[in-house]
Length: 122
Image 1: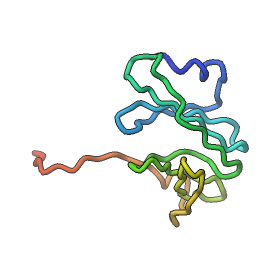
Image 2: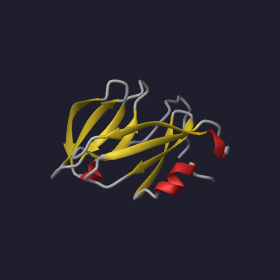
Image 3: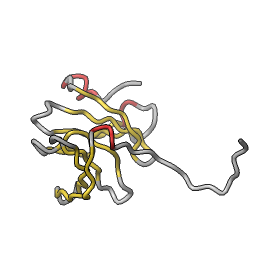
């Protein structure tokens, strides 16, 4: 699958692929001390021309990794420190809110699930 042209020329240090709603998202991380991450979304699956940059998050000394996305458009960030803190970032107002959750870097994972009343046979 073709990546966004800008990512090929930027050569980011680290890429991460996640789902963003019904779309595919690529996160492009720069230097850790920069605290920056660009988010690209493929609007139409499999069409390289449909890649669009949604936003760029830039919080030096704060951003370690994006853990996930909330339905309201906010982003869950892991803050880099001696231990990790989970923060909520509002992309519209560019404000951070501390969720109060802390732990090691392995302590935070985000999984998706769908509620169902279907019984699973063992």
